[in-house]
Length: 84
View (cartoon, rainbow, N blue to C red):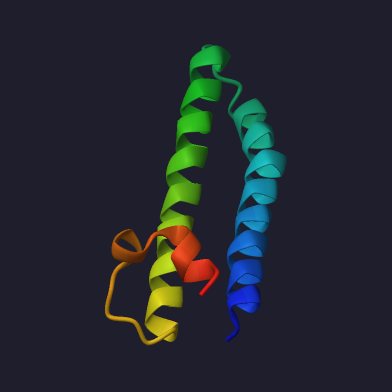
């Protein structure tokens, strides 16, 4: 896979997860109808960061393996993985 294709995979994966999160997480909170909506919105934001962070790590790690490198994403840096 070319560097440009890897960049598109990472970007589109992030866009997909982020869009689904935005569309469905508010609806879920409304369905639960819990009292402390402000705290739940904050927790939802933290959840978003954790989920998309894990997705980014997974995509970078698999890109590293697919590229045949033994170095980890932290060794190379995200830009080095994408723009190789």
